Image 1: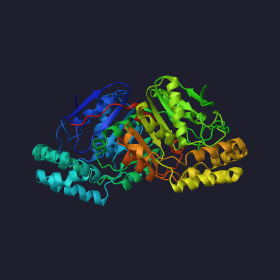
Image 2 (image 1 turned 180 degrees about the vertical axis):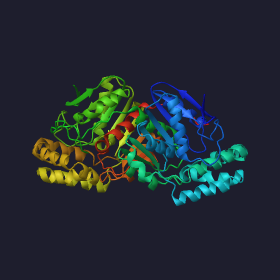
Image 3 (image 1 turned 90 degrees about the horizontal axis):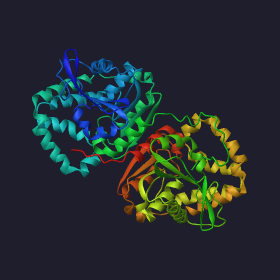
Image 4 (image 1 turned 60 degrees about the horizontal axis):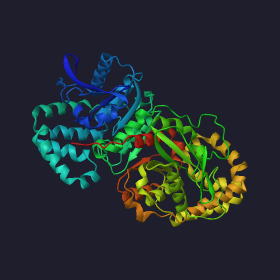
Length: 284
Length: 272
């Protein structure tokens, strides 16, 4: 399906019925990246997937936009679909975008899952982005400046053959495609001035942060910053896992995400004046 | 509510709703009643909770003499047979997680998926001494409270829930902790865990297992779940920051999401 934003096409798909669940891609991802997960996600939800500006089958966009513009596009897109309350799952760039959307339109977002996300582009990440821009000079440079950071050290040690195969595929296809690299340059630039640190307290919905312990792009201390900033946030640390946790631990990722989005009622366990008796000991 | 007789002792259990059976195994001081706030969400996710007061817990008979934790596993095996359940999912926390491991070591074929919170593979010398401290404090309700309760929660939880904790202190020290019967049960339960060690059997427990660790667990520290993670062939591990040993009570909503998500999501994901 196509949605036209400022005269350019945004490619999207919908699957399933129920409360809307918007999936927001990482920077190099597209709607296709979610295909293995869509059957599980769509069992109880109306899943909405899209290629963001400059991603996948969506149009190329003129340079100079920031991630704020992606959030503007999402607001218009959701309005077009007549959706006024949506749960959002974002990973990496998509998680930053989810934060942007939740800050700009808190009434739109009723539940958030942020997988390997950061709330701002700190000087270290800004330089990392710059190295990716330089990396677009060649397929090999782009691979080495990005992918080794994206997978956790444990995964790379255990899956060397798979990584080598992946490297050959990526270098021979998208990473040597000038159009893809052009798009990547604009997408990378769009996050270089990103900073929501002071705005996190405006996010009022329940938020779950998935923080891989071996994430070299969105480091654990950046995940903690989000946890501190959002009043209703919970966090889970994932040992032995890197930035692309959904590829490294696909089944765990699905069970965490589905548990979070399917289970919506708060127990309010300790706030209720439930009677206590000696058989109701809740300790070890 | 129902009872089942195992080797002359009455065991109390409850089956709640319909769905895939989910055997829920209590921590050492808990009982079937402790799960009441969670049952609606769990049944809604498609599971049928099977709640059990283990031997010497809650409304099950007192044992009268010491027994090993493996007896709890044999009792559960008999209960599942009695109920005609050929495969169940299991959730266990702390002592209950350890009983779950003993059952899984004995009968891995009985188990579909398993979630183990704040659980250890074996009672090491350090944990054994902690248990001894509990037993020694058993004749003084205030001492028992001070020995067992603060270490079970995170410091932040104590700060957040100071009033609730104070009410709880008054209640516990005036009721259960002052009861000779309760203290005798607790001492036997504590001693039953002393011989717990399933390290050798872990490679044979092949079902999918989700291990929950709490960063501030001072009874079953995260290293213990890492130990399990490295030896169980099909395990996942997650860590809850700023959370103490009673993770399900400190983070009830997150806990419910984790439990129901892992138990109800059963398909394999095929990555390209």
